[in-house]
Image (tube, rainbow, N blue to C red; front, side, top):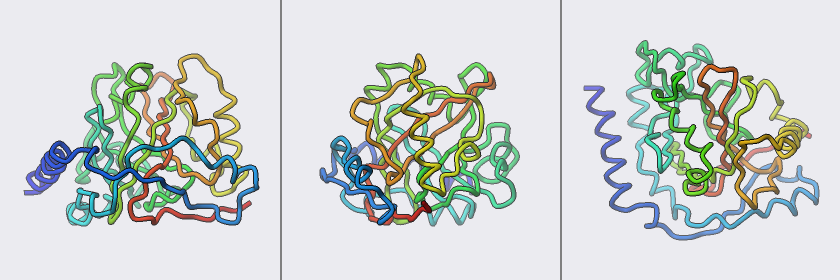
Length: 263
């Protein structure tokens, strides 16, 4: 019965996605909220980024029923869908251990495949400056829920596929994928203290200062500041390198994404 309900939700999600599509939406311009009163004048000036294109008109267009999924597993708090890939899975967070879903599936059953997850350092409301979503990939790059992330290292694929969608309860968030690169396989959330503006700025300084070969970056996204909301999709093939695909929030259907950080 549990299997049926999950598959039913996924099937319905894909059916409606195909019939209505992303084009069945109204273009709008989003003003990102966050760090109110905490920005410098320079950062406020830099907040204006490229036009985002179409975004969802209202939270009613968030077609995944998170409340229904939580009846199956209370650890579910979102659903990630990346067009152009087969990444179309629930996102979870465990209170038992940060890496619980490295070895358990989305039902909480033991599984080598694991599930997509965030750690307790991130809130489930997606209001952090940096939310990191982890997923697995096999050593040969052919298996795992995040295996197809590696396609974003291909320049043509990167240019043609620029959006990711995260459904949370009562809201639909749209992210513009602006970078894909490999870095040392260390924990982003332990490398920077994103609860402080200084930590957010340090990450951005390091990111913009890194001109490594093979790094894909979308032109026009040089003005990110700590006032924005980023998501990092991360995985590894076990070679000591971590793949990071970065997205910036460009659509907040319900208008709930806000935060304050400490200087």
